[in-house]
Length: 302
Image 1: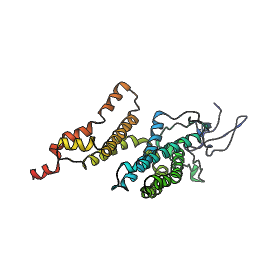
Image 2: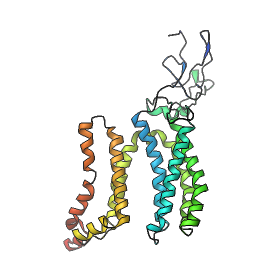
Image 3: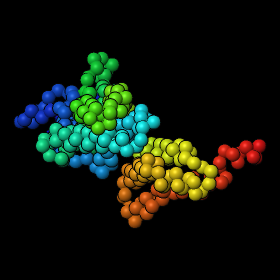
Image 4: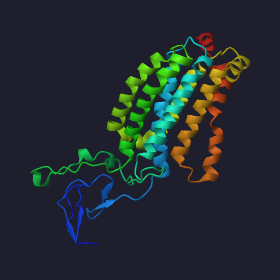
């Protein structure tokens, strides 16, 4: 290893200039990360399985919000009439993901060159610029987690652009303009998602799997509570024979399984794969305990 004085701070580095010469301490170029000797080295690894699950979560977050607002802003409309809007949102998200991957190094391929994530502070290098001897601050702000920080923002930008190009046409020609309000909603929540990624990306990276499991359970129970709860047969009929309710329920199961997979990373398939069989258990438990938890029974107790 070259005998180079280590830079102050966690993320300052020196750029190799050739002939054993190095630049002054500062921020490494994009796509580089300082090593233990503060030398900026290009990132040549690929995203881990957990990294891909995080990126998938951020993409799913946008898609689920699209579907939610399409359904929420058209509550009095039939489900079948909204199918073109749901399909459009899915295709927009897929196209945005493909374009994003093609524009990330190496360009034109679905491979991604990335830097490893080692700790929470890697996401917030802008907060850790050192000030040697309490004098002038040394600015070393850079994307240590390249490209996990910016790739999500690029995806949201493409998703928003494609929505504005495609969704009005679908809404006007196939759904009698029923998707107008959901388009306006997306114009609000996409900037919110970008700010969320900018501010809380590090926390989301480490806790998104727990959030998915908890939120999917909560929203699943919230949805089930709106079904006909008078008897086992009525609730089963309302859930499993109603196309809209069944689709929402399967969506919750998918998200719950997604959270379990991202949390365990299927590191021990013999143990973790059978856990996925328990995904429908909360729904079955809810149905089987209606007899004891129905609000009318609470009134009888009082």
